[in-house]
Image (cartoon, rainbow, N blue to C red; front, side):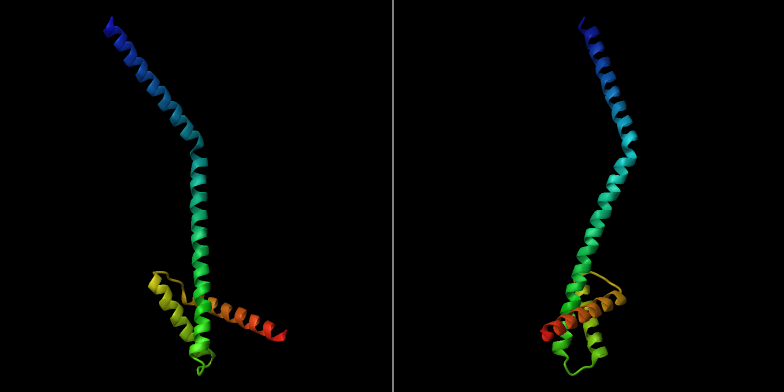
Length: 126
């Protein structure tokens, strides 16, 4: 009698495992696209946040480079100061293992120049 009960219990357990597996597979197949979309959205959000952090770092280094070039190289003209600022930002970013194109770095430095000069002019008008 024990062997019959044992056989029935083993078969019942095997059927239950099979049924649960089938339900799980059906659930995954039904929601696969939604799961893929969710993963893609999370990955996109993480990449966007990382890009925002890198842009903020570039902006901070560009402003730092502009102020450094203006104060350390008073005797130089604008294009030479810009070159010094470009080298400064490139070196600092290289030390951190971050790379931006020369155009992006130049744009950030020029933006810093425009914003800093604009703030300076607003303060002197008051």
